[in-house]
Length: 94
Image (cartoon, rainbow, N blue to C red):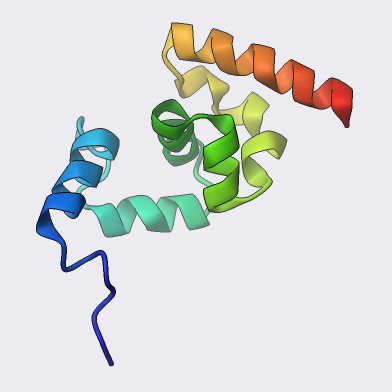
């Protein structure tokens, strides 16, 4: 078995940790990814906070749109307002 390509890049991993794990809500990147797979509201909110709704939905799927009402309370106020506007537009298109 070969190691995952991006895990070997220490600079890239450090950058991800700085942007996604800055408050140590999750002890390491693996726990954060596990929380995303389990559709944890705080993990989803962090991903949306950092990458936005569209890119986050590309990364983890439709759960970003479906569970918005559950995790939006974990978003910072300004980001929450921006995401609510986009979410409302997206809901009107569907």
